[in-house]
Amino acid sequence: MRLSIFYSGEFGKKVVGNLVNSDSFCVSCGELCDHCREPRTCFAPLIMGIFELRTDLPDFVEEPLEYIPAGLPMSDLIIAIDLHPDLLMAVPDIVTMTGAKAVIIPVDDSRLVPAGLTEQVRSKLESMGVECECPKPFCSLDITGKAHIDEFVKMGFGHPLLKITTDTVNGLFTHVEVLRDAPCGATWFVAKKLKWSDIRDYKETISGAHHSYPCTASMEKDAQLGDTILHQAGYIIRKSVEEAMEEK
Image 1: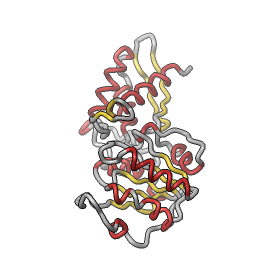
Image 2: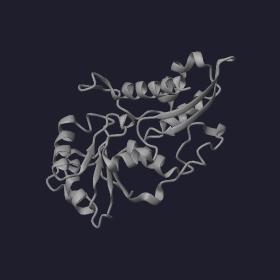
Image 3: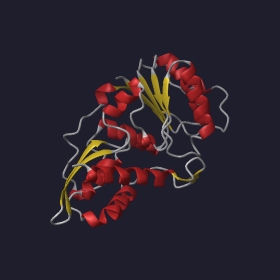
């Protein structure tokens, strides 16, 4: 799998940091850090290019390709995060230049990535025979039946998946293992906070950890979801924990 990531803003930086797993990526525990992420795989060798695109652009960009770097590397999967709408419209051109077989356009804030625009880009890509998913939020991405996108999910990124062991006598979480992380890295932090916490307080523990990580999803109400994307992300991680607690 060869990845290229095009992004603007903090959400993209978090996704890149989680994929690369640099020493400076997770600072959530501060001085109490026990370097729990050190054994985790670094996927930097799979990343062909990381391109931070400009945000200080006019409302209308007449020639979006002028803002796309030249000589793009050949890639299998393009991840396009929070791009200016006119640059997002250029994603099919990026696919042509890189030979990509799949595109993921995560939606963390529907004001930046409107539903009509993502559907327009998706339609164009699918007409080209290119796999496309626009998960809202990114941590809702699950196995799709699309080979290249599923390969990314199987690398351990998308809808959170955990393995949990509890001490029912003392009412504690004794082991919380991340099998699949939210692309921003929040699942790892939630798991850290759950371990040795009181089972009865799991909802509050999850909510507190999810907000303090912090989740980067928008707090603006999304018309399609009928709720905020941040709340949707919170529901996803809580359900993932509950499903893991039910596993025998």
